[in-house]
Image (cartoon, rainbow, N blue to C red; front, side, top):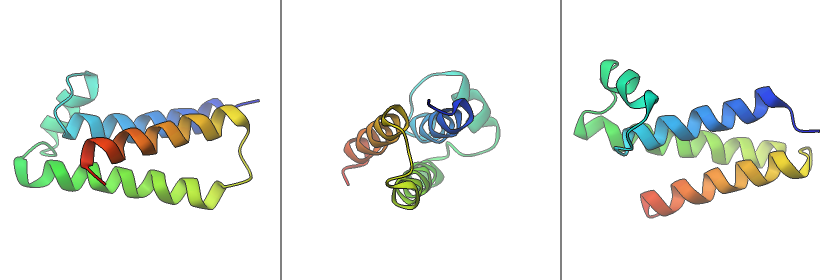
Length: 85
């Protein structure tokens, strides 16, 4: 059974990256307030979130249930596409 806190962590990291890339959602207001959407920092913020999600995928490989692995894999792939990685 998927751990809701783990899924929340994945969604939080993905939302931070998407907000930095200009997606409009609740996280955008917070990221803008914190200065994370300045053009020079936005890409760095998104890259950092992608690196964290990628590290999380590597460190948890083989230890996740199907739902957790799918959500994490989808988040990594979506951000890689957005960032051109």
